[in-house]
Length: 382
Image (cartoon, rainbow, N blue to C red; front, side, top):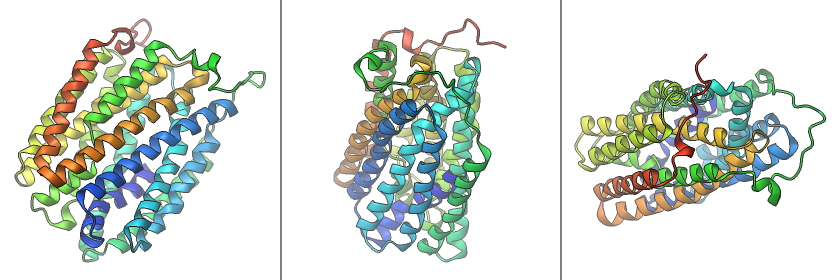
């Protein structure tokens, strides 16, 4: 939550800073966001594999959070697009280092029958930070007359606090000292990642293609005539809905078909894209981003749960790593295409394309095998 406050305080303003203060195009914003998010997801492969090999998760998580905290001052000092790119990539490398070990740690600590709820709660707390950050951004921009750099300096404080809290407040479960560890990416180990797991990976990639970077929500709000200082409120609206829905949908995923819940999430995303494609003012944009937030709450914790359910316990870090590698490539493609469409055909074309990718993902979801996306219900009720 604390790191998300820090990151979203910056990221809710960064597209406006790039376009307004540094003269970047929408394509440049799309490329930066695509590279940043795909870098995160690709780095997760290596951190996940390493956490499985070492048999420890917390140390890598500390390194990742610390790197994220160290990059925050770079945004405040950036005078060129290149510095912003470097800061953004380093920040996302930190996120990549901590992401897979953190998710594997949650899976290690949560009882199997409550795993969906645990990931929903983790996602909800992440998202609380994601709407507190933009709220702070709005208040500080109004207070300091749109001084981007001063606002960016404030983001350093919660980032440092997150590292301190992780170090002193989290105790990692101990593993048996007799447990034999081998290279997780050896052929015999990778062969233990089942067809069910790889189908979840494919589903995750399809969802990522259908949902490009949220930076385009910020640009859409600006295009609707919303004042610069108030634009971060669209991210507040999305993340309030996201935070409120993540835990209930996480609980629901423990008791219903994963396939059905994912399909409903895609339909909600289609609705969000179509609303945002119509343009309009405050009301239209807020409805669109609220629907986007519902989709995130329905699907993101669920996909993490599905990875945990289909991977061996001693390979969970590796499993999250490969899942995020494939999703990272999909994110780069999706954000680049979104930026090209935005520059050449306008904002509506970007969101119409997103709706089209949703339809493709929905078809892929129902043409695949049933077992990977169907929850086991034998002992899930306490």
